[in-house]
Image 1: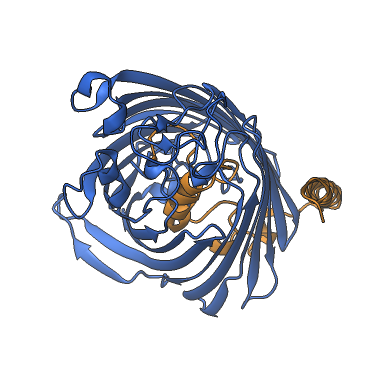
Image 2 (image 1 turned 180 degrees about the vertical axis):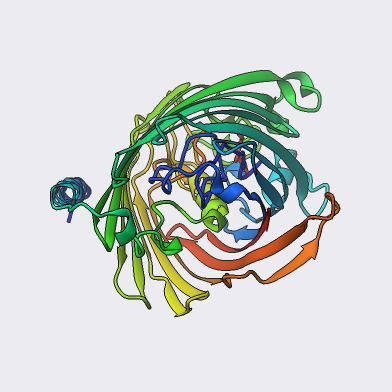
Length: 409
Length: 77
């Protein structure tokens, strides 16, 4: 359930949008070049994620948050001609979540497990003016209790000198969730799930303006307006009220408004200090109608040990206020209209620190023959990244990712 | 410092920095973009960072404008 990774049409020489939900990166893409030297690109991404904490929402804010997730993903970019590319993003999330077992209060195993599959396809085309790129795409994801479809459209136009670019993208998600209730809240037993289904629609508008400042500095300003309607709460998240105590059977399922609007804006700034050292900075301000206000700052400093070997330490700080509807275990009143004890919506600060390593020799790491007419593929680059994440409310996480890049003429 | 003050201070700094940066720019020709074309100068999250961004979009109620996932999928574990 964690981490949907969809795909999208990516047309820049260095595709950088793979999580995807279709919209272009909120920061400016590279100069438009759909031909990308006519090469087919293949990336194999994989991540291992592990988190732990004791604020799990399934048990009303006091349960385990232990979770692991493994995510192999394949991203393919294929040029159809000099101005058109198709992309495909295929992958899975294989997760085990200790908290999920608590839905039934009976531990069926060490932890509950599920697999999420996702596939996204995209098509992008550079127009005759050579400065405009348009794209369309769509995809779906499927897991045990959740199905999601999306469609997307995007438009980007660069200035004649290539120093400015404006991109606009929209995307719509159409989701369907099985309503799984905690076992004690199911009416007449409620069968396996509780009962029924519900839907959610999400509409995203992404606008990015990028600007070259000088030979060493460039910035991008972005916003990503989001409107959601439908099921925004998670039915198997329990909430315990102070009037009723913490005994099972007195909980209610989390309830949140059925509309949410998000208004984030971001500023990215990259500076090429020396041939040895660059700086990448990002700041985001966030506000929404749930009452959350947040600030996020990210800093990264790539160090080129050699022209082909890069080390990049990074740091991220995030702070947010609580949603209006959040209260800890036993703090909600039974008279509250909306209620949640999900600590994702609580007030906290978070720190992330880590290190990445990239090795990308100019002639590649190696070559090998493929089954496709004996064509020779190049193992172009290898990147590995580790991050440690900690929230002030106790959640900790470790994450390691790898990206293997291949090209085929 | 109170949170509203911090918010206004951050927003003020944000727009000041944005406006000063955008008005102070010079024209850079294609042949002068050797630094700007460096892989680490790309104005986007690294591809390998995608998973982390998605995690943050679920573990933090405040998500968006950073290339993270904001709709679709459950993420409710």
